[in-house]
Image (cartoon, rainbow, N blue to C red; front, side, top):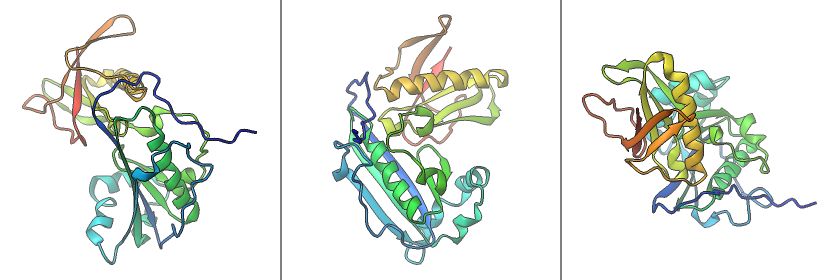
Length: 253
């Protein structure tokens, strides 16, 4: 039986000169990663040399450890974790980071998740996907199958802002496209079209994850009827600032 882990491929990869990055933070009540064996859980070509795993103890760097479990990220944890109090009891966390230039595959993501899964199996209590703004309880990360297929919705979040901006509408946007070396995407729509906008952004995010590039000025056809245009995302008096990590593209009618 062939047990090799197949790489997540980007069949439409086009060089962009951009860097892809992933940052996961695994919280634990004690040091849990005393050794790391990635044999059989990552593709052979995974960029192990680019992997940066660091232990952060609250006693030594409380600002760093508390920074990801407070404020808006804490509010997310309250909604996404079954017992967010475990975050308060954690005395340390691990940062798991991989940065690679213009990757032709997504093995850097497989690598980062494999390390997070090892931490979860060893006693971590929760994992934060920093760029996607997404919390996961440790058991769901511990059970990740290294042979699972790639799913873009597992790697990004699509957020609809609850407050509408005059002349723009509700901002619906992605978080996490930096993981593919691509800009995040944003649309402004009336409340009744939030679901439609989320579907469009999911579709476009999948294209970018496959390696496509959206150039400013490009026109898009959605469902064979709707015509959309791609322009740089620049917050101003009309376009709200949704605090993206990195740059973005605005999808307009």
